[in-house]
Length: 99
Image (cartoon, rainbow, N blue to C red; front, side):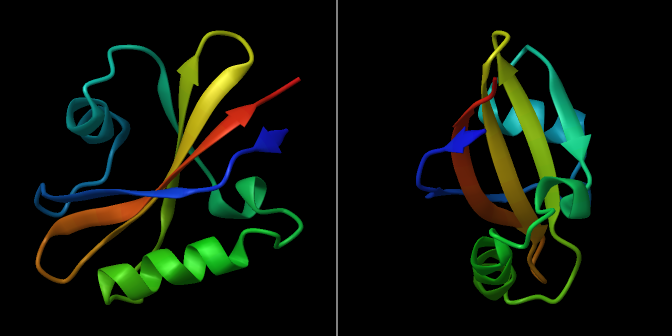
């Protein structure tokens, strides 16, 4: 998987839920969105800095969630998000090409 540099994304109020349906609405995407386990997505620990940055941006030690948004068969985006103490979803988006 080739991952492009990450870019900051969401900072919106959505309550306490971070689900595939909520993310689909936030990013206005009608295609496939699936929750991906953080340990599966970051097997080698190469994205630890990204995860730590999301936690810091959320000012929270709550769980970070990863969502995969499909754009065809090989292109996708990964959203790494956390819920801040004031109910905002904050995180980063990484574009990927999977083969």
